[in-house]
Amino acid sequence: MVQVCLNGPRSAADGAGVPLSPEAMAESAALAVAAGATDVHVHPKTPCGHDTLSPRVIAPTLEAIRARVSVPVGVTTGAWAEPDPVARPDRVREWTELPDHASVNWHEPGAEEIAAALIERGVGVEAGIWSGTDGAARFARSPLGPKVLRVLAEVTDTSPDTAEESARTLLADLGPAFGRPVLLHGEDGSAWPVLRLAGRLGLATRIGMEDTVVLPDGRRAVSNAELVAEGIRLYGEARVGGGR
Image 1 (cartoon, rainbow, N blue to C red):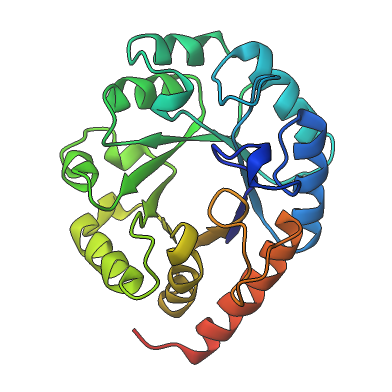
Image 2: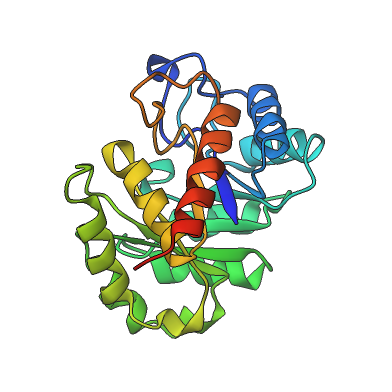
């Protein structure tokens, strides 16, 4: 599985390739799926470009993307999209259009509550476990652990020199992860090294403008589709090479 992460918290300042409107996200998703992505992760945005959990933004974003692709589509529930941990689950209960899945960062306040609200509504939970946080320890104690769709092992170490070591430490901290599938990915300088490691380990991964805006050779990527195509190529090479 290679998920495309279309935009993340990035803005127009990060380049024209970052899709910000529902129409741009739908077009970018369609091209990325055509390039081989099998799942979509998106941050719906207000007209001002801010991440949000508002049903008035979530619904048209999902509708636009689903009109162009038939793969699962997920959204973020990051604390920056709704800083109030008490209000966050209420936002989920207000959604009129439901995503296939939503990421929940387990180190953030209110993670258990929003995950429970998602599960109640039949939305798959991607448990975001960030390196450098207590997310793995919290997740290991969570009664909701066995119920999540998958675990997003997120390497926040952005150094390409230490990214693989950080990723292996994170995976060790996760342990059996309740037997749930693991999607391993990095960000910025660690995006490509961690993607290659995921290939060698046979784990799901993701790539896209949220995680990096540059190709492995340092050139600026023009689109999510270009990142996905390169990611699939490198993942396949690493998978064939194997090794742990």
